[in-house]
Length: 254
Image (cartoon, helix red, strand yellow):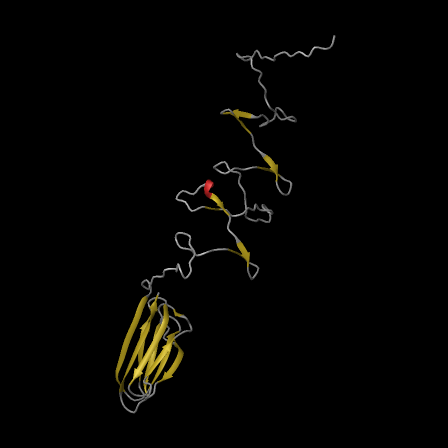
């Protein structure tokens, strides 16, 4: 007669239902601290460990939402091989979520060793901007303060000078200075070297003539005059008699 392969149930007298209780322990040190698997809330609490890119044992971490964390920032010590993944964008929606994330942006290799991400300017419906669908442009008020500082030096004697000074209250840009006289005159544009210094650097000198009694300074360098400096136009009468000398300092304070 051949052997009979019978089976007998395993029961425990320590439990009312006579269930078999199994405890999972560490094989090498079963009685050591933290060597037994914990069960609570009907869940086995397990710390997942794995090897990093250098072969070192590391614990796997999750985000507050339960997602596996990834680190894309390079660090020569802690993250020599950072995580890398493609950029995915969502369909335009009032409530974008994971189900609408299905678009992959593109890029092209440019000059200076850069890779440029493709960006298109479109209208609010996503339609291209072209001659049939132009981009609307509106002119708004300039946020800077327009400065028009006018001065007239009355009855300036022959070979005498009069100063037209304007002290900036903030950064002064787009400086434009005009001078005029019915007679011959010299106009010297100056800018103070420092606030309250009382010393000036000459920017440019211009002379008028009988045929062209007006001069214009379009001050391009430096591009802006710092706050607290004096912009000065020295007006000198070169005519053979006393005359009036006119000037305008114009620009924008930002």
